[in-house]
Picture (cartoon, rainbow, N blue to C red):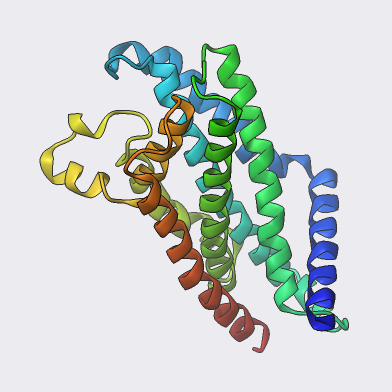
Length: 257
């Protein structure tokens, strides 16, 4: 138990260090504040009038998609910030200290959870200003937020793996965005998948972003997560189970060179 306590204390200290870094460099929060606001305004007022979502208002349809998109984009920053620490030699300093090395990357993912909570708060406030009206109660919203954070936590480990695998933060952005953008737009984030060609819809309906968006949207609209809830949870758990050991492997290989 003492080893777990030391590991947890080291992880908390790393979160504190990362938050101090963000406070001194507030532009690191642009991806979870300004960027999603731009997407909301763009789709709400430019494209919203041309997209039919049936009996659900487009803004109520849109905001859950923006939630998941923002949480997903935050994972890119997780990897890029780790790559920055590795490139600038900060990790070498940490390795010289009597601390758990796994706590370094765990602290990075915990920091990402806090950034995700900030993003959710910002997006909820902006959504309410542009007409977003969640129909579920507090329990439904709490369940939606919990699912979002679980999905974001799983993707943060992918970001960590990417940050340890490649050599520069720029390479992390390029590599992860190549995967994220197709998944984001080939999903139910902005338009119903029923409007897509059959071959694209077959992919869109089963990929993790669509499943998570649909479950979050169902909670927001007063449901209990719908039929996509369990698959969404399974995707988050599966990604975490696979990405966590990979990130540790890539990190240890990188720091041992």
